[in-house]
Length: 291
Image 1 (cartoon, one colour):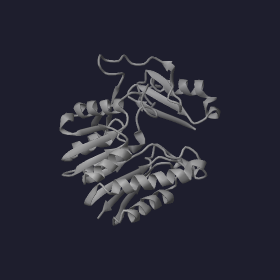
Image 2: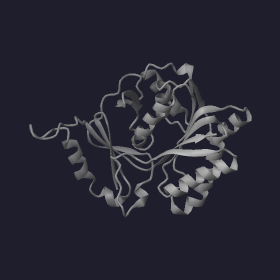
Image 3: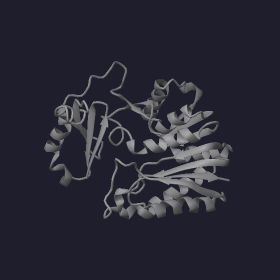
């Protein structure tokens, strides 16, 4: 019931419920103690300066320590490194704990697959997938998110990695609306990424969520060029892998696209789950070829 993400010198903590939060003070002290080390035989210290809590509602509070000084014009963004690239993270106002660390291996996969392709990234947030695609040799990257502030960070992430943001496209727009407009304009891309927020916050919302996933995947498949790739993702814990893959398959049948699943992934090893708690295996990511 506890998530701890570390961004440079700041550890960001989230609790799934109030039961887990009972140990908040002791936990914060233990996390911050990692910055002090324990002698020559102890593991290398993490050099933390603050432990910050983010609630599910997006509110935050400093638990221990002191937040690092923000550089002028930095918008309180902490630069971090991921597979050799720089990403800017706002731990105070950003989604989740500031970023989505569980997708880092999948972002690297996109970089490995993007060379020579036009890439479209829906629900792009601050552009993690987009930056990796551009660095991987994508001819042009289109990033779509309804939040203008997130797109502002995405542009800064491009610049932080030596990429010219003006050479790519950014749209502050509803993803469903943008896809319908792209279909009407007969636009196609060699690689399409859809990584939406959770559509199923509860078990009761599951039927509606699966319908939304089918609609999203059907729209997304229609903007994939023949022979192109679809990267589809779901972070809804109530949508299991079988239901997720079924939604992709149903969407392919609806729009009459031939589809093969090349690879299926979940969250990385630092997001473990219990055998008796299948909802803990929440992240699904499928790489598909589309004909």
